[in-house]
Length: 173
Length: 184
Image (cartoon, rainbow over all chains, first blue to last red; front, side, top):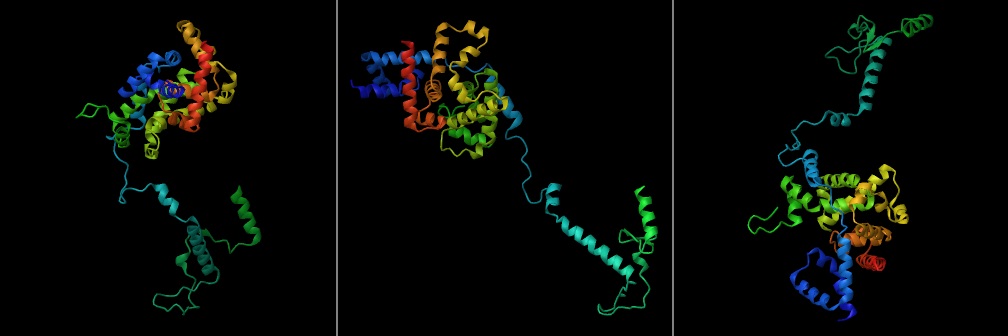
């Protein structure tokens, strides 16, 4: 019996005391321990250490299992929609909408409307070619609502500076 | 959970595969097999049974949710125990308790933190052995407890304590030698 034998035996003593050692090695272990007091002493130390192994609180496994069912679920729960035809959450569609494009479009429409009114708009009649503009046509009333709004914006072009200031004060309260 | 034909327990790999498909029986079996080890690993860091039990619960929630990220390079047990150690460290950080490095310097904490009732129930011998374990440097203590309490291989111990297989073996044997000297 050499020191190397003892080293090898002590490496696997935990499996021996835990009862997880294979039968062949177990026979060798029994023989070695019978003839080696130093390894028997180490075995005793390991058994004393194992005796203080903490045990989990009673019912811990059941608590974990219950929580798993609650939070993770089982195969019985419905799958989340995955096909292309399924409803796409609203926020995802909004994410793809370029808000700057909407703003730019609003500005263009507003500018066009105001420009038409200010410059004595010349709206080509249906059937006219794009190059022909009837300069004698009256301002297009269709763009001007009764409430003084053109394309969503109030028309203040008839007001003097004083009137405009008074209006602003009135609006601001 | 056993193989219907042979009656032999199913290996963890099979249970993990089934648990990925939300097989609740497979999940239950994995919990039954490994919850005690997860609890002890957490307890070794937290020194508090209630906190360790909470950490063990969170460990399995994270493990099962993260099964897709488990590539099987280590055993499921090693993987779960690593999660348990991380959870326990997270608990420590959240609670603003002393760091593990401080615990290492502090010495036998577990014995002094036990409640009076527990201390009365514990035998003098048990207290003595526990105190000896706590006196070991952290890596030696971890190597000894993971090897003896959990039966992990030196390679698995090394994975968990962040060292090589050889270093884990050295830490274990140094720890055992010191305990032997302390026991006299």
